[in-house]
Length: 378
Image (cartoon, rainbow, N blue to C red; front, side):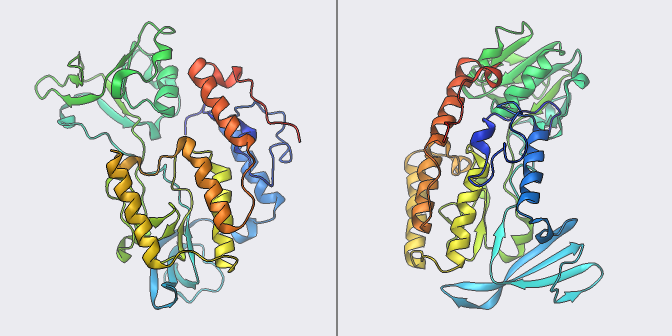
């Protein structure tokens, strides 16, 4: 996480329905706060609802596996093996290793920790330094450097803007070459390029989709702002989940394992407002496990999943974009709420999301300080 990181969404939009930034004592923070403010909000949430005692820290989940036979509707009990601080109710402990059985498992390990390196032919022939945006902290290390960034999503645009203030030359490569276009008028040393398609084997130069070439040497830096992999190493032995191509499957509603509906995955979708969506997913899970509603049977879930896969293929959506939601998140959130029998998120949230997006397109460099959207008074 880089030192200057600010949210790209308004703080009021990010809050859960039951705890605002004002209630967390952070009501005077900027509309687009720094990462320290978001951490303070989460810590205040923990204290406000007194749930810290339910969390076991300094613990690594090593393995999660179903225990046969299944209970009902394909729902087995689960054996979880961890190392680190032991948690209560353990079955067996051996050399700092603990096992325990559960009626259900929710996987909520995030998907921003295993960097994805761009798949570029002959990348090994690049002569300079390569790194991932995951390891970027602040721009001083790039003083006077020649830097090429691959990927123009949030991190690519933020980091390229910071580096352009100190580097000798900055190139931001993205499909179509339009990523970061708002920076070109601000920095003479900044330019946009089309997608990087290969590295010249003899010279180490970068070749872009439009045929242009970027001369590079051993002092050049190639930064991959190319996203992350979904990773569930603790489920590998069970063979229950595939992440091939950047798609997590088989899941029903991006949330529930199709065959074992007491294995849940919170937070798989991206390009969303995260905390409220996590809340919706968590409420869906808790109400389902409490018996407040039923879900389609296994045959229907499998059919729905197959239909979704077919739809992605017909629309030409790559596997790695299967969980990308954007404006579709609101229908998804409402669908889960209706299925689970609880209130939908407030309608003003979609308005705020659109306003933030419009502000960024209008002022890509300064939208965080110029966005005029405010949460409606209630």
